[in-house]
Length: 468
Image 1: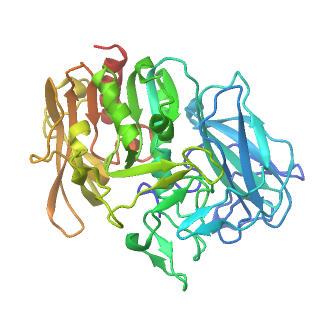
Image 2: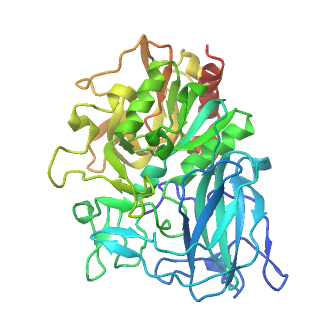
């Protein structure tokens, strides 16, 4: 599994910063495999040898609270944890906020399996980090590095209950849905894949129906598509938007007073939603809070969350898809099509990037972008795409407009089209859906940034923040 925009092992960090190994020698962040590796240069740990892998056993934490890291190290040796906050930071993309003391690593027990469900909830606690009261809320990455130079990552979120203009909702449920840990050819499973006894990768029909949050992310330890959220964060913090942070499990659990925000921003691929998540988003819209969806294939599968074996809430994620008893897990087949919230809905995959074709260019969203009617924005329809479905119900609205209509061909060569939607709900809330994976990368990713999308997004958020 790879990100369709291919960011490499460290999509969140652009700095040329080096770190000191245990000999005091400065070494680069990671060794380019095409240039050879020294014995001390950091290398990405893998899921077969598990040189260093870990996860956190609690969800978002507030300043003043603690977060627990469970880490396995093979062979046993000392390691460090460097903690970074994602942001613009003069273009570096992240800022180091702390480093752990030198920690003693142990080989934890192999993951437990129950059917296709893989869990590491039995791993011993490796490090407890007390979050200082002065830390800023935000998206963080813990970088784990062994003495012999292997590296892995653990993302986590720091949030509080303060009011802000915008609440950024990180799609941790969808991140877990795609998590194939461990990618070892034997036990790993996601909602898309699993392995057979001969190490062959099986498809969706044989994949897991229940996943555990108590395990590392596969590969480098960063979730698939995580860069889409980080693209938005870097851009939004660069231009000073007032952001609060949460995960989708916060939305599910009702831990957030959504009336404290003028808008909710869903910055990345956000495919898997529970019933409480949807109810919360709809209730927020109906009370006047705007919703901004900057990807495609949002709100597609319906999921359930349940406690872990130890009783910790929302640590198991279930999606039966089209298997087993009961109705389909597709929202649209449960008579609640995603279009009733988004204004558009999932149309299919886009095998090769295509231009986004501007429509209704005289609308305020396109103001000062330089985009004219019918202009083509190269590469902006990519990954997956949404469109308006005439036979599916629309949400109640005062006004509604489509701001792009972009033809492309699917994997079978069949002509399709993508659309971008905006409507104003009866409450006055704006609901925007980009209808493409490429919108967030167009904000701040090298090789993908587009000033017209940057300006259009600013037009949207400025209007929401000013409650125009």
